[in-house]
Length: 188
Image (cartoon, rainbow, N blue to C red):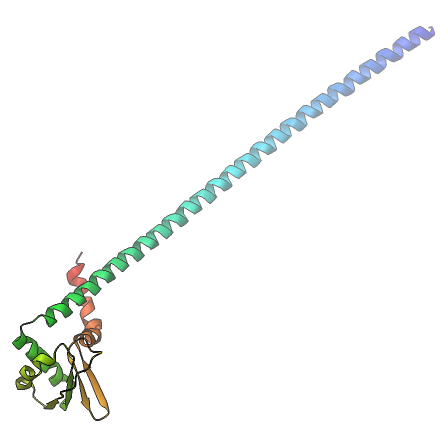
């Protein structure tokens, strides 16, 4: 065997070994790529699941917030209607015919005190004398009016003062009257 044969044999063996190494490297590379694809697919699926869950949570949160806001708006609208109703009641009381309005004002005085001086609002001083016949207690009517009072009067008896305005009456009675108004206005 000559040197050339030995070199050829070494070259063939080296070539065969190189092909074997290259083939093994290719197979390993394919396995690595396949594993990477599998991991990428799993990661992608997890990301999609997480994104879907997050989207569902966001949608549910938005729906909850929208429902809450709708309830707030509905309650505010109901509150406005109730306020308008009480304002309408006040306007209706103020627009009673003078004799009925005088009887109403006297009734407020009669349930509020037994005696005292009535200081009428500027608006209602005009019917002060019409109120007198309906009064049951010991009441005097002052010639002085109360400028800051929109209607009705204030009863003063010593250091005690009772506000007998329609606004005050409705404010005091509102807690009792509001549930009735709600039932009538929003019967469902």
